Image (cartoon, rainbow, N blue to C red):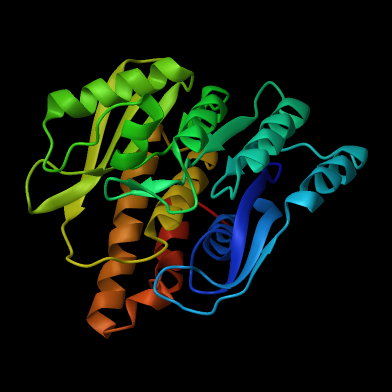
Length: 283
């Protein structure tokens, strides 16, 4: 039996509303991957559409977390960084990478900071510049179209896009440092939505699309990134991992829309886990 792989997942956690650690942990675990979690903040719910949520910043605990893990001699096959609440947290994650990265460790950064042409209200351009420095340390990054523009200091363009523009972004993002880039929110027309991937080692650009489903569904970026990382760590190629993640995310959205669930509550990814596991060979 193969050695069980282990991921360090550095995200916030919301008690209700499926995003960040409440999707990363079950998806990676279902794929047979041991997942050590480092919560950057604890919230009662995510912030999309809810009022009165609680928020506790855990920045002061993160270095102690890392020091304890280092004292235990923990080794990680991947370091998975998601939503970080401050520039200070970016610095801590950067140091964590320096401490725990080994020859075969995959550093996977989701630069969660913006969408729909705007930075999240808690961030500014200084944050984007620091996030670009963190992405420079990554082996793989997964920005959406807005995040890609801000990482590169370019003007955000509205969709639909052209293949030439997507290729420009992929290659320029890889020039920051990561050998593999996955760009989400790619649209060439109003019917299909998906992702594009670039593997610097082969120069290959690949696309993965699904039918467009109207609506704004919370947590889907985290679901996509977690499923993609799980598939990649289970031995799938970058392009195949992206297609699996697109299909899994699309299925979760469709299931939720068909059920008429309040979109603030997140999407039903749980019902799709058996199929995901069969596709990637998790156990």
